[in-house]
Image (cartoon, rainbow, N blue to C red; front, side):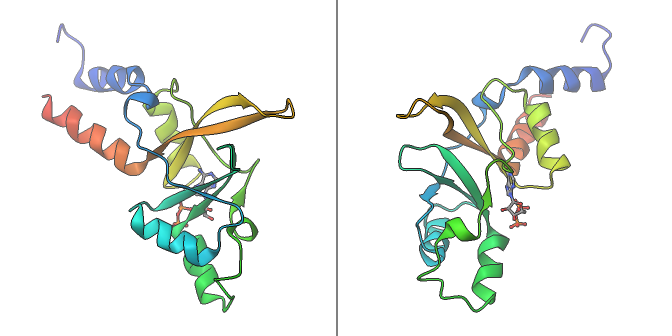
Length: 154
Ligand code: ADP
């Protein structure tokens, strides 16, 4: 590799790969979904993080495994309690976009100590306001898969 150090090669690779090329399909629920139904959705869709969206797909919040576990242990009626009450809500949701580098998005996962980021693009709502449409999911698994692929290329 023309005199470049291995570290340099890996760094260049990680900074050239864009989030959009390694993301997964997002698993979403709406704000009025019960905690019980969200737990079922997490099992059926086999994900660790659910994104909460408005009917039109605009990002409203995030639900992690522990958010749901905590609520389930808390003695609430999880059939009645809507996830909107317990989710991490915008504007506190950390997100990424398709054209962000994988390196930069991975740094967000580490810095904010979360397992997954919604991948969004800006969208204009019916009322003319701007929102963030959820188009994908970037999790630690996507990063690990890329890491393994890079290793196999050696
Ligand atoms: P767990 O809670 O199962 O360990 P996480 O570490 O991903 O999973 O989530 C920790 C907390 O951060 C949870 O309360 C969750 O709602 C919140 N969270 C998860 N993902 C995000 C995100 N992308 N942006 C902001 N908060 C998040």
